[in-house]
Length: 482
Image 1 (cartoon, rainbow, N blue to C red):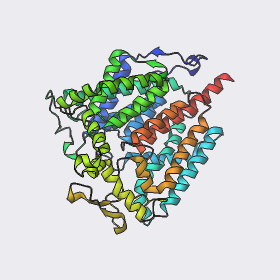
Image 2: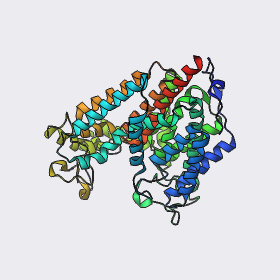
Image 3: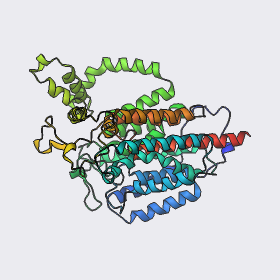
Image 4: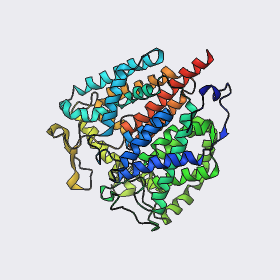
């Protein structure tokens, strides 16, 4: 994709909604790169040569596309897996490069304020970690996820002195998102397996290899696929809501991909952010009322389809959660712990142990589910039905906000929340600042279901890109207006 001069693409109006269109060449280019990632994720290691070739090509032709491609490789996002085919985790390599960029990138104005905020954030995280009885050699394995926000400086370094236009990022984010959606549709409805997005398996037994694919073409099995591949949509929601109108066939692709994913929390994050970005709150309320009226029909249809939509199971969770004890013969506790796909059965014993241990304010530290062995961090969870797995480390819950409290306590959770709010306040008066805000909202909501949140590198890489985009866009916009 050739990059037109920024001056030819920025106008004072700049807020005109237009129909999104891209050339087949752009879709094919994105598809080839993403398919190369798929091949590598299937342990076809020669694909790395094509990946590197396409990365070098985008470095020379379009640094915006380079950042997207490099991020997809570094974050894996369901295509590859960090423990398959890589001598070291790619996210660790990126973290090292980001620290180097953090040290050498020229910091002025807004970037200087952000630098100070990130430095203080890192200082507080490390300070709280030192209060833990767990060794730092173990804790650093989890701490590095929290520190991934410094990917911002790698992106800024790549885009330094580059004629950046945020519209190009938006365009490419939509193109790549649509191609990823097609991959989800092919895997979910045609191949009924894990070939194009091979590492979105729910159970490890479903793992695919290029010589042993886990698939059942045209079997109508419709396996559910986890959402990391769709995380890229976080960079596309805002422009689609504000500036780019998708065609009917493009919306169909998006809806089918989300159905293949069937992860309600992540879908809700996209929908809420789209509504807020587009200013459709009142219309959304009307649609919610209509959905409530139609809920019995959806419930019956889902029951008849075998719960493929996951609507009936969600309703069941709320019914069990709110049902008075005497109506379920003393099984209120079971209804409570199974609420939210059983997340509360993970959370309740661990928070209770945290309170008993006096660690609610500062947290247990960054424990590792396998490598932490100290007895004070091991509990016997009586709420698990599987007795064999009831003994576990007091970490690893599928709500990232609760995970933060387990790691660094209430104090750490407050610091983390204020940190990200402050980052947004630094750029809130910049043009298109809510592009950054929208990614924060998406991953905060998705984190309620345990999907990345503000504590994992996959989301923090994308949050960093959106923040870097706002900074670079305003920098070059000001230069054009001088």
